[in-house]
Amino acid sequence: MKIARHSPSLAVSAEAFPGPLGPYRWLYLDLNSYFASVEQQENPHLRGKPVIVSPAPTEFTVAIAASYEAKRLGVKTGTPIREARRLIPGIHVVLARHDCYVRYHHRIARALDKHLPIEAACSIDEFACRLTGTQTHEAKARRIAAAIKVQIAKDVGPYVRASIGMGPNKFLAKVATNMQKPDGLILLRKEELPERLYDLGFGAIPGIGRAMTRRLEATGITDMQGLLALAPKRARHIWGGVQGERLLAALYGAEVEEPKTVRRSVSHSHVLAKAMRAAPHARAISRRLTAKAASRLRRLDYRARCVGLYVRFAAGGRWRGDAGVQATQDSFLLLKTHDALWAQMSAECPAECARGLRQVSVWLTGLHPVDALASDLFEGGGDPAYSRSQEREHLCRTLDGLNRRYGRNAISIGAHKVDVGEFTGVKIAFTRIPDAPEFDE
Image (cartoon, rainbow, N blue to C red; front, side, top):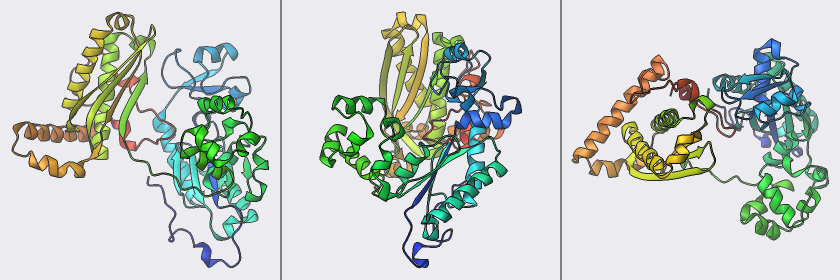
C-alpha cells in the first residue's frame, strides 16, 4: 500500500479558513506495545495476559515487545527471555510474525487516512500527520483524535491501541505520545513551554539515548530543566554538532527542517539460535542473508561496491571485515566475496569458530543508483567480464521473479546442507518498514 502524502487534493490549505491558526500543527500516532498488541488482537487466548514477542526460536535472546500486562509485572522490551520466564512463570512467549505486523501497519494506515492525510510513516508503529485550518484548534483536534481511535478499533481491532500527541511541531507531537501510555491523548501548546516538559525523563525525548544521557550527566545536566536552560552553543558543544542546537530549538516549539536521508547501505543481521551456532550452520545463514541483501539491492535499483561481514563469537569476541567489488547487484559475485571474507575470518579465528558463533551480520555499501552508473557500464560494454556480469544480473532478476511467484527459497544459489529458511525470515527494524516483496526474498 502506498502511504498517502499531504497534498492540496487531500486537505484544504490553511489560507482557505478565516482567522488565525490554532496552536497545534502536527498530530503524531504511536501504537502501544505494537507487536504484542497485534498478537493479542489475533489470538483471543492471549488477551489480558502477560505476553512477550521473541525474535527467534531460542531462549538465548531478548523480548522485542511486551504487553502492558507483562510490563506491570516487571518485563519489558529488552528483557532476556529466560529472565522473563523467571519473573513471570507461565508468561506467553510468542515467536515474531513480521509479515503480520506489516499487514496490520497498512490496515492502521488506511484507518488513519480516513481522517487525516498521512505526512509520514515514521516507523512500523508511528505515523505523523500535518494539521491545517480549523484542525489546528483544540476542540477540532480533540474530535479528530477521538475519531481516529474509534476508527482503528473498528477497522483493525480494539486490542490495537495508540497514544496520540499534538504539538506545534512534529518533534513535540511525538514527545507528547510518550507522556501518556497506553491509549493516551496529550496536547502541547507552545505557550506552555518549556515548563510543561520539566517532569519528563531524558528517555521520553527522541534522540536522547543511554549514551547521550551519560554525556549530559557528565556535564552536570541531570534533568529536563537543566537541559532546557542550555544556551544553543552549549548544546552544540555537548552533542558535538548542530544536532544539539536543533533538538533544543525543537523542544521550544520551532519547526526544524529534518535533514534529508540518503541510502548508504543494505544490511541484514541475525542472532543465532543455539541449534544454529556451529560454524557450518552460521555460514549457511550468513550466505542466506547475503542473498537477501542482494535481492533487496536489485529491487531498490542499486549497485554496491563493498561487501561487509561481522560475526560475534559464542565464547566472546568479534570479527569484522569488508572487501571491495566492482559496482554490482550480482548475487554470484556478492556471495563469492562473502565466502572469501568468511574464509579469512575462519583462518584468523579458528579457536573462536570451533566454539560457535552467536551473531552474523552482512552489509552492502558504496551504493549507487543503477542509472547513475549507466554511462560507466556502457563504456565497458566490449569487456567480456562486463558482459558476464550483465548476464548474471539478468539471471538473478529472473530468480527473484520465480521466488516471488513460487515462494521464498523456491530457488537459491548454492547447496545448503541445513534448512536456513526458518532462521532468516524478514525482521522489522522499527525505523524501517519492510516492503511486501521482502517476505519472498
